[in-house]
Image 1 (cartoon, rainbow, N blue to C red):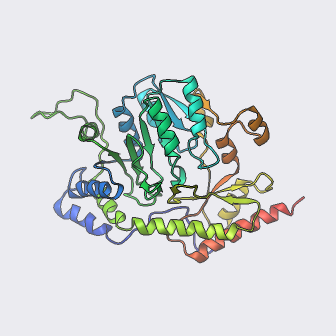
Image 2: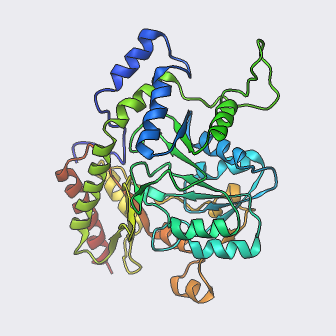
Length: 388
């Protein structure tokens, strides 16, 4: 293809510069100012939660969220394994121990069945980090019921799912604390940034306190606790305000891209596109595909073929329990011995990882470009199938 096709790149809406210029005109370029305050209020209005704290990244939001939920050194924290490392690195920052939980085939998110198994081995985790993978909501009815039974708080990692909903409720409402990411590849961006959402003023004030270096209200600089330089700048928040105005358009375009891929691959028996399950309305931040067990092409065949055509794609997230840095951490699989033998894998997420590929889902793509990408993928698959 003559034009480079990105996986998911920043897509400006037109009003970002207005808010950025206001920050420069007023000289509020630091992590304070009208844009920060208004971005937080606008996110509260969109999500439907009363409090928000704009932060430097989604990872920072998870870090402070886990601290507030009471996670301490040597505590056990359950965490989705099939995710990006930013979901679990903050557990290590605190000195706690992640126990990774398998996915299921229904949502590709945390398996309620595996979560129940985890409680049999670790009855008193300090928290659960639940991820909405690729914009697909997790199965919150079951997960929240299990967490409530064991009195465990949930941190909802909605880094990839802004604009998605579960049973009519926006993601970002299902955790005791929930977070979003505004990294450059997300559905809307602030260049880099994140947001923590919560329900009460006490949480809001403590998170804000920690995020601004834990400075006490003294005339001089006094600190009774360790704090962090985690607040979002007024300039980045200005980008976010402009981006939020086009969020509904971006979600609609992501879903349209996904629907075109569904149509293009409907007659190909060797590739399956992730679908929404009953009750879930994903934002389809990335359209995620899995190759069938009898497909001769591998995910790397697809990625390399697309790259040769100037098209960006990506493997699935490598599960965290397979990462060398977390080699000493425990993992709870959904599969029993019989299922392991049938699938050839120790877990659902290992199976998905071995066959998964993220297709370009850039909101600037035209319908013709989406169809052209699908044509390349179809050809790559059938070319492999024809080989002996």
